Length: 311
Image (cartoon, rainbow, N blue to C red; front, side, top):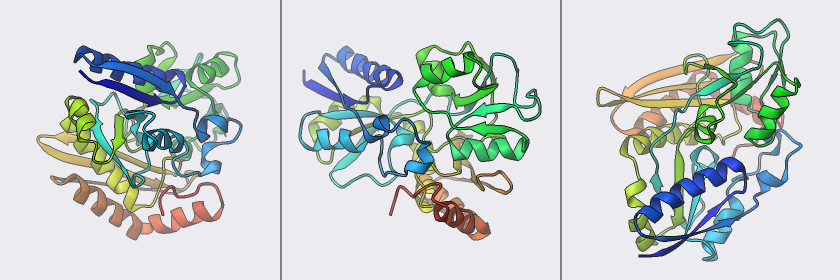
């Protein structure tokens, strides 16, 4: 069988994801090598991601390695991939999705509602911040960067009363001890593509595409394509206050989406059903823009809080 070289970031979660995919490929008889690549996002650790705004900050260097032929495929958290891939690349597979929701982690408190007045909560996501502020405007929200272990360590050290993380990463790493609440999507709409892995290859590399085709999960492909179509319509990257959560209900796609003011003072919600993922995502995106989402996003970009990751 083939010798396949996987490109991955070096974080604990990224390596888990790459080894997971590598293991599945080895089960098919392939020889697998792993190349760790440091990305722009990994190098900037002292600034909230929303203030960096670099297009593809977790993917650019990995795509360069793909283009140069140093690796044959890349394993990404799908929410890190810009909705419009650079020319010369394609998403060959989207894997079975982990729980896409966010979780509330704390050593002392059981839920968002249980937090005392002015509790200190850690997150660097404008999407999470906005939705937290909408239900608890009194909370004191502070930036939180670093890998999963670093974030959990800061929580255990008492730097925060609670932190908000993605369920998927904690489930994959088996670090769920401090999870107190899986936050319903109605309270905190997840990021587009959260919980899914995207397998990126060089466009037209039919051999590698055939090797990884078995990893592609139809429901994950449909739901994340819908979410990413919405995100693309809104011109947003992974660091803007936009949430998108699609699921298959009775054979049809149901999409729930939000655009939020970072301070939580205004949250626009829209939900709809459809059968075509791209059409559904774009139509919900259009509606949100017409309802005032364009003004919210223009204000966010104008303040320099976040920069669109797509043109």
